[in-house]
Amino acid sequence: MSSSLSNSPLPHRLAVALVCVVFPLIWVGGLVTTYDAGMAVPDWPGTYGYNLLLYPWTTWVAGPWDLFIEHGHRLLGATAGLVAIGVVAASYLTKQSATTRYLAIGALVLVISQGALGGARVLLNARQVALIHGCVGPLFFMWCVALAVVTSRRWNAETKTQPGKDSLTRSSLSGLLLAYAQLVLGAHLRHPSDSGSSRMFQLVLLFHVVVALALVGHVVSLAISTHSKAPGQTWVTRPSLALVGLLLAQVGLGLATLIVKYGWPAWLGGELLNPSFTVTAKGFWSSMIVTAHVANGSLILAMLSVLWLRSAKLFGWGFGPGNLEGGAT
Picture (tube, helix red, strand yellow):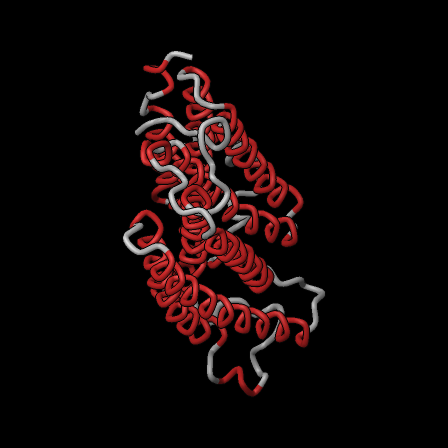
């Protein structure tokens, strides 16, 4: 293997570019759901009979808001697909490790799957497909962030320095699973079944709140444990602090979402907890609050994956050359 090729910064830079494309994709996708604009364009893979990339930009920009965000979501998805192809090509051309190449291929498979799910949602006009689409999106974002981590120069420079601290790795992983469970519950609230009962909707909302409280407690405990067991290891302590900040913001956004989406505290009387109830008012700020809550959830999931990978590298499973080996940045 050519050392100069394997140390190329290209795969990492493209992985970072992919992260930078996918996060706005998550945000705009959240707006599509918030505004119930999933059927603003009734055909797929084209847009009103045009090739996706050739749809007149004046019609798009000057058209209805629902069309603007739905077509914009498709364009961002196509961009993510092109960048993912570039990451795969760069990982092979620069002779990256097998694991890095597999991660790059996985990112491409996920973005293709997301595109297919989005198309199926339109062609079938099925909310349940939209629910699955909403659950896969954060996984794709998390995967892209993980790819950026393991292709970085810092990843290769670090070695397992403090064996026996694998409890941090296990705690990070359990937090990651808990955060994803919370996202799935949130997706059920965002895409309620038309045939679902009001009681079931209330139960899902209750579980969403309970799991949120459990996640806050877990992340605070994880941050304290990280700083006590890994003093001076800023590679893992900084993500744990960032997680606390993101969780605090998420709690605030969650409370604000209850107000603008469910009319809290009026819902305590059970009047508004109906499966078909979505957004009280689709005003700009209320929509931004609800969508920010969704997007910030994906950031929390991604940051937990960063903490898990880094703690595993340093204290837990001893990733190194021949395992999760990355490139350079």
